[in-house]
Image 1 (cartoon, helix red, strand yellow):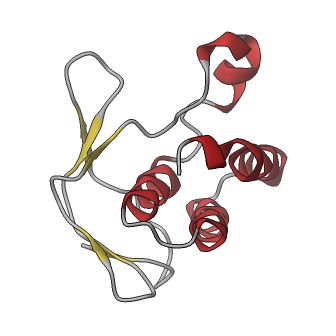
Image 2 (cartoon, one colour):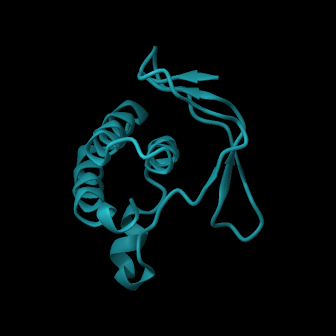
Length: 116
């Protein structure tokens, strides 16, 4: 079980499903608003168009925890701005360097509306 933002980040337990694109969460994640991302939750961890080629490869996989939380919040229809801000905060807690974190966050802010 992970309680978001409590103590140092120790990693999130996931299982990569066949095909390599999807991951399944192996432990509950408790969010600050009281929601729980349940063990068993499946997501793709990113929705970046592969057309971006090298740029996509540079950002791919930088945030697993943040991506899981973000996908869960979008599916629950939590207001998009809150989802995106929580994603940024989770990436910070995860230790994603600012040079990756902010471009990823701004890309989510700009292009997330197509997936929300």
